[in-house]
Length: 504
Image (cartoon, rainbow, N blue to C red):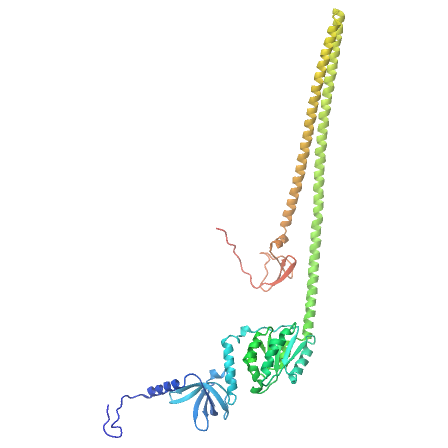
């Protein structure tokens, strides 16, 4: 397209932009020329806060001005708020508000001018420590409830020292305080505090807590507590550290890395040292609880001892009765055995006597017959003597056989007596073994034997009755779990049915 005539007659119009396209181009040019965050110093004017919480203002110097906006979301994370006529250092990015065609500074944070270098260094150190995870709240350690010894790192010339000692003496005079004097402002303050944490603090025995304290002051006065080396040394400290630097509105790197932060040194003393009166009351209450528990356990153990003693005393009586029964049976068996042996021996003696008498009568009769025959027949005397010798030999042969038979019978009786004695001993040993087995089964059948296997028995704490499916506790009720040598107090949270799985 070419225009004829006029002052633009020689110009060639290559393209036509809409207002939106032009403003988009300007916005892109601005964002490209100023990428990322910029830091702008100037004086605040025309401050206006909208109903939504956003703050609109003008940032100017002697030669120029730029509009700015401080959104509500960014203001939540920044303590400093702009006021009319204040000279500030604003941190943000360049943007453009297209409905009006105005470029503006979108502020993310703001500090008073003149202190900008301090805040920039503060944010650099803070960002670096955050990136390493050293400011993570999960890293913080818990302060001891009853510290054995506390170290105070502060200046000897300030009022912080005497306030801390006064409050600690009122609350816990028995807990010693070790004073570690350092400079708390100036160029050598940070190095002295680092040296105290790295060299002097580790030499203190039984130390449970360190308090780093200083009174309020300007940003320059508190600047040593923003030192990166100091922050890392505080993190390496083996015991928890309480930061009590400046006032509540002053935030330092030491406050961020400390395990616990308080507004003032006096508050630090109140947090670290427990009240002796409260401790004494707790000790007295605990002592009463212990005494009551000991009395209850002593009474319970005494009752158990008496019950166990009664059961144990009954066992000898049972054993004695069984021994008496066995002795009586043994005596009866032995008496019957002896009577039987005596009867057998008496019968054999009578048999022998009858046989001896019959033999004597037989020989006497034969002798008389021989004499009669000798007289009547006038037989030779030698024939009579021969017969007599023969009968005598017959008697001699018969007598040993009879005696041998009697000896065999007596041996059989002795063997029978020994067999009965062995049977009685085996019966007695088996009965005694069965008695011991029954006693062990009876002891294992008691509910308390399960305690030795790792089980526990539950009782209702108020009635001391056994917890069973028919006598279940209710939710919130206190129960006692008995294990070998101890009773554990438990609280019922819930009761749910349990179905045992059957084996396949």
